[in-house]
Length: 124
Image 1: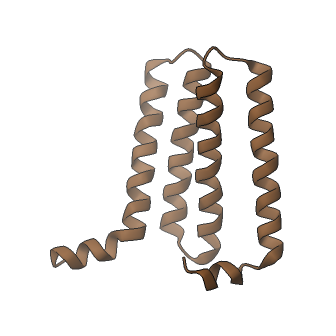
Image 2: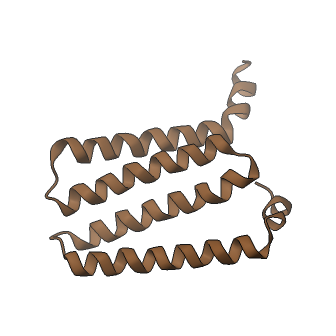
């Protein structure tokens, strides 16, 4: 993403994006305060991180960077699963699935952002 392509999205997109991010962040914090799980700080932090991943994906998608957007979505789901597992007492399968999806989404995003440079460096 370059600055020109980000500007081309227009002010309306950015206002809607910012409003959705703020409303979602407020919902996450309020929901965590109401539910009050034992590790509330971890739940809130993980949920906010999931929100950031999804927010970046929403910006990547209209720019034609679909693989990067997909990676961000997968990482967001993984991080949300970590939050759910923290809120429900860390059931083993859920927390490890969340970590795995977070790592997979990150790998997809790195491939989308740097795949051409890696192939050029290794001669592929």
